[in-house]
Image (tube, rainbow, N blue to C red; front, side):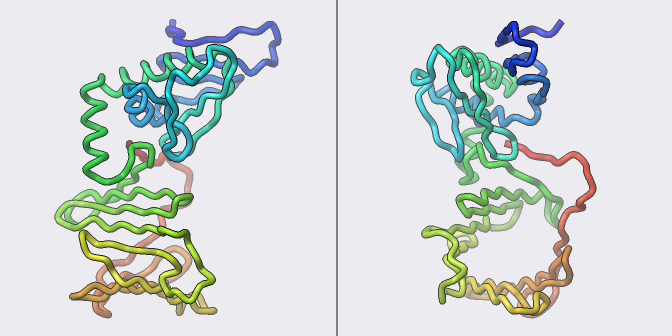
Length: 246
């Protein structure tokens, strides 16, 4: 029998009670497997006496009430779901302790946090991976804060930011975006045309020019100094498991 780490009861059969076990988190009739939760990010904050909220916000564990309250639960996708609980502090403690155990203990959580700091990407932002010519390429995207990080073996990290927000209606050809390749700031130009096939993105570095040109609705060509070097294709829309990692 699965051990209940946190459970609520109600005489109302329609009540959406919360139940946490070693296998998953259940609210009402819906169960979320632990594999769909970003346990590493929640464990790291929990060990510091904090609770992780939306978009990386935190608050002290002591601020969570012993009575009914809302506890944010972070998913592997980087999104956060507010969960109504009857004993907010007890639920957070049970989930935090479970997250630490499932991540391999405090020492391994500390290793994950150190790796995330070295990567320059917080643990709560989901990582997705793709095979590359020299090994696995990692991509971390958070659309709300307009940030993209891409890194892989034998190549400098590429980072895209919008310090003052994305501004498509300005005269700035980069639309407010700033790109760095390693320690070098690239000159970014988004050339948008009425015909989508004529639209392109240019990334100018001191020693070369990268261009991204649309091929069709599913793919684009990557050019280096006007020479094609790779065809980038969108992942299949067919349903299937998606791999996320902290």
